[in-house]
Amino acid sequence: MKPFSAVFSSLVNQVRAINRRYAKPQIEMTWFVKACLLILRLYLFVLVSLMIYKFVKTLKS
Amino acid sequence: MQEAVSTTEKARMGLPATLFYRFRKAAKALKRFGAIAGPGIIVMVADNDAGGITTYTTTGAKYGDHLLWFLILLGPVAYLVQEMTVRLGAVTKRGHAEAIFHGFGAFWGWFSLLDLVLTDWLTMITEFIGMTAAMSIFGVPAWVTVIGCWLLMGSMILSGSYWTWEKIALALCVGNLIYIPAAFMVHPSISDVLRNSLVPHWPPGGLTNELFFLLMANIGTTIAPWMLFFQQSSVVDKGLREQDIRFAKLDTAIGAVLTVVVATFLIVVSARLLSGQAVESAAQAAVEIMPVNKYVGTIIAIGLFDAGFLGAICISLASSWAFGEIFGWAHSLNQNIREAPWFYAYYFFDLVLAGTVVLIPRAPLVLITLFVQVIATTLLPAALVFLILLLNDKKTMGKYRNGTWQNVANISIVLVIIVLSTLYGVTTLFPGVLE
Image (tube, each protein chain N blue to C red):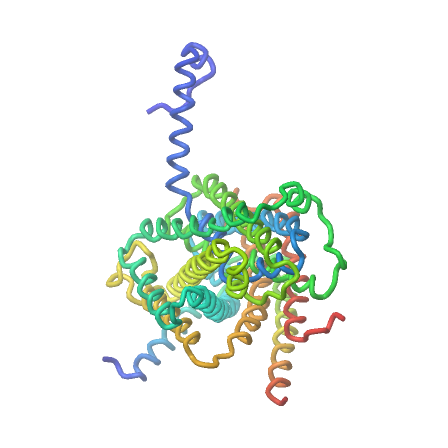
């Protein structure tokens, strides 16, 4: 049985390998794709901020 | 063997030979369709999961048949969205998670994968809530239901064959059709049902916040993020190729019809037997129908269990496939547990974790159900945007990329879903914000 630290470090290595493998997006980055991804980032930022706000508010009350 | 028969040859063959040729051609096509069909029907019917059954009974009880036209409208919408995953899977031979990692890089890949895992796990809890509630109507304790489900779900995949799993899943899909006889047992007025199905209109009282919330819930049960991941991975695991796309689309279309048919018949039942009652879950609906019509009440309970079971196995598989694709584990149902240990370990882990939460006394199950809706809201727009962009990538999709009309239809659908699901997510977080 592997110790927990070995399992954890193996997982971290796997994640690093995945990040390296998919470091560069393969889709053709047209202006439309770039615009869509930017809007998506903004959309998610607003939505996640709302969720965090609600979560904190619920915890406080 | 020569397949193509020219017009002059047909004319020379005579009528019996031409008929025989056509019959053989049709039989071959049917046989091929039989081999290809499965992922589309399963994903669409599994879409009517425990949460979906609850939404439909609530819709029928609250608004009668008045929203049938809206559900029928959702059938083509679901088809158009899911059909894109068929093409993407058959052409790229990548599951949806891998396609996102490959197309958009690690950041968006991890975002989609982790959001999917969380959404799937929370949705599976709602499936177990549905299954335990359904079986409690027959006096079966929750722990017996949960352990029984784990054993059944485990035995389904032990054969190490995709075909076996698919056949069992298709049998469960047939079980989902149980609501059809139930609708006939309540003797609805066919003309009323047809009118409410074909003529779009708002129910008495017009468009209110409550109605908007229920419409969103219906959209949410018809188009869910896990469905995109499940069908694409399923198409890849089954080994479908470009030439199979035509039949795989037909499979998806049949599934879309079935999902609408089941939803429609269930609404017809609850509209007749629960009209005006405040229904919060399908299990509660079954309990309240029992004194009025014990057969229909029993059918609703059995259907709820079947829906929860089918939903749980599909959703758990969607996550397992996604993890397998990204971490490079062996991740096919055609491999046995020894060949794909991590894939099956994750499948079981997901099921055990979700089932265990339901058994925890005083677990915040209502909060979990609400949380599912909000988290799914964050994933759905992202997943749909990625899908549209990938389907327009000429380099990857070649001649199978979206055409102009497909883009017009799909982009319109995606924009409407994004706006509505955002409103849904916001109103779930802040009830009354639209008042």
